[in-house]
Image (cartoon, rainbow, N blue to C red; front, top):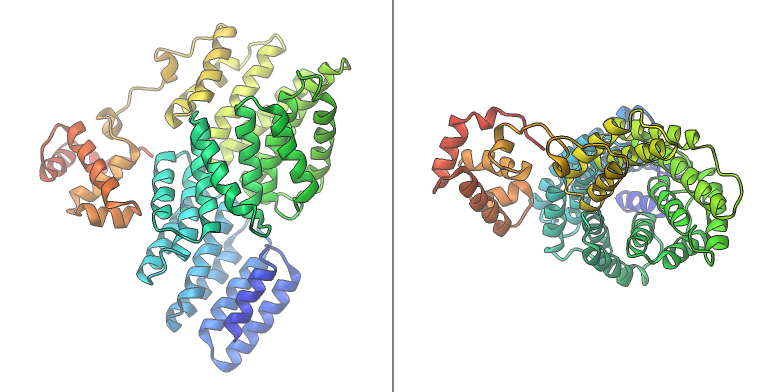
Length: 477
């Protein structure tokens, strides 16, 4: 009964820093301890963790969830055990602690499989693993995990989160058809589902970006306007900040169309209003906030120039993008960092200067090449040509230093990880289980490794890895 109450509390409130949730959960903990119900106490502690505000120190929340896991394990209660893993990985990603979030989600996913809950809890934890990996720029690994989870046919609403991650990667790599397919799949499910911020807001943001990339500015603006009219944006900073940034970009891109100028200006003003209401928790949200500020400066300038009024000073825009770049560097997210560096260099060159632009473009080019973000690489190369800035010896390859170790042999970060397991004697099925991918994908990775190392057997691959000291190298990912 108490466990059901705790689950109901999470469904009704479901947000961080909720005083009503905290009061209900505190009462559940008190009663559970009186009657010796460890499973219910674990569930209630998880609810208390959700009621704690996410600040610079996530230690108190992690301590609560650690207690919940101990109690749940003692009672052999799978729900609160896995709920704690979901909550902690989600909280860590919200705070911008991507490496920790991935570690907790990976452990939780293994636990879900042990308890026979790979399709339900496993799908949520796969999302919670793929998302921080994507934030860290480990896109191939994130996509593999998301696609592997989809093969288990999880509940339809959980699939939308996985489709969104796949769509984000497709868009960043220039696969507009793939990104549009993700939007269509998500829309087909969510149009018949009650509002969930973690599903609906990312859909709006991705659809806005896809429409803009397709050159359909009017549709992009309409998507943003509809969200401003219908959806609750204030209570979901994690998902609203990226949406506001996408909306500001759509406004700026619409400035050249006289028919859209009035609508874009009105939406720009509403975006400013929503931004003023939003809280900020963690490094990533701070970076998104600063990015919105920079995007808003860009939109303000584009719209005021189109309206033949005085634009904001270019130096202010440059400073805004510099702040955003520093924030993304601190958050450890290479893709938005590269984008911010590009926009900063653009503002410098647009103001007739060159100081720092070359270094910014070269760093951005290096990151974009590493990620395989072709559209971003193309934009960087175009601006470099216009500014007569050489990108280095490798040109389109961003002048990266000569690789060594696994990279020198052409191994990707994922293949290096597979090689470690091959050297440890794991079979393809065991590798698939440990890395949360399909056995077929594991087989493909092993075949690629044998080819790149120039060997015929797994044993020879292991021997080569030891001989070249690859297993003592740092993971290139």
